[in-house]
Length: 634
Ligand code: ADP
Figure (cartoon, rainbow, N blue to C red):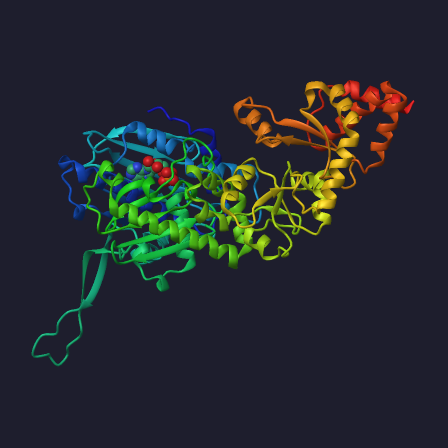
């Protein structure tokens, strides 16, 4: 029989697994039981809709068979089984989701974390305790079974075999006792029973093992003088787990560690979740739910492959793996399970989509999730910031999507960078410290906090003592526009000429100056041609001589965003060059125009270039600009 090689990554993982001095090798059992349970879930699901399966819910079980003589431990299930291809695919490769993170982690090994202990490594963990693993499996619907055998890193073989009924036996040939490493314990029924109790108690299929019991034989009556008590032993199959799913246990009986472990195992994350919410609802609909907020986005979160949804159970039986209708789009990062006895087992996808109960549950869960996020925001800012880094944009898209339908729900959860604090702030925090005299919530769009803060048009608002929000993300501006629709103190761009209150005298003064400067402004416009829509006297500058702003609904950032995402902006932002009449160079420009027009033209070019540069806009002709500056210096 030809030996086949593992894929490279699998080999590395195996080496790591086998060679690491691993302190929690016990967990292999949890992993194998969890695989067995998943396999049964799959067949049980089929059985709901297909009479041919021939098994009732009560027939499903997982067996543990320790065999001291053969020095093997077998984990056996009557689940869906694997075909030859599946054996090779599933046990011969590791390019699967759960392991992906692991691979990434291995590329940057960190001494301080126990990599393997962090998350489920599945089937491979068998090699921590076994020097040979045999998997005998028969797929549901097939007559032939197959035997997969491997001694670890050197590869595996697959051959045809016999097995009664569908299912899988994983047979571990335990390593010999060595150097203080105990493997005999995995042949000891008492120890195995304790492991099941500890790690796999909630598995909802019975995990059975044959246990030996000895008890006192009843004494004969009457008791003889020299009566010696006699013991007899008998063996019986026992169910080791309570089968109560975690979400059905009272909250007070479940430890944080159990909640976290359940999450990691179920959803293949290697990190603890940021938080969990355990819901138990009775009333119009009865259900239990366990919701988790992950600490980071899964690797495929921002791809089309990612499917949102919660696992849906009916009284402990899985009926749908990712029920999308239970989660609104803006909370699509949430993972979890919902279990309700009100759903029938035969519920089909189509029916589910229109189910009123489902809608009620979804609406309740949305509130719960919001509540939990609010709690984090209030009580654990650190955690909330971690959440925000991972999923913040999701909430902002939520505000913008569906014509702003969800803005009420989401606005209190949003964070923005601000001129007042090192970290991002909420709108409520901003509002709470607004002075009475402040009519608007000010913002400016910029590529980063630093760049936004350095924009010339920010200066006068900051100098007036007002806080400015720095919108650094593409979505921010749209978010603000949607939110602006019904605020008592509306959002205002600092680039807006009437951003700050003005007296009538100030307005008149501005009009007078504009009128006076008209010939100069016309001259500038003539020099710049179509590059700008207008040249005007600025009302938004304090010390800087020029800046570039926009007229109309398009901003520079929107233009950039559309170019980046669509390859082209639907229209260009209309550029306005603003000159500060109070800056000394304004007088210089004016003088030049009276004395030497060619020089004045050069000055206009330079001011234009500076306005572009401070607005982070590219110069059309960098070489010409450089030459111009040098010629003026000479
Ligand atoms: P994971 O469970 O994280 O996907 P594993 O390495 O534990 O990774 O298992 C790989 C795959 O092998 C599983 O996804 C499943 O398809 C299959 N598998 C493992 N154990 C069994 C089993 N007892 N019965 C059927 N399929 C199994």
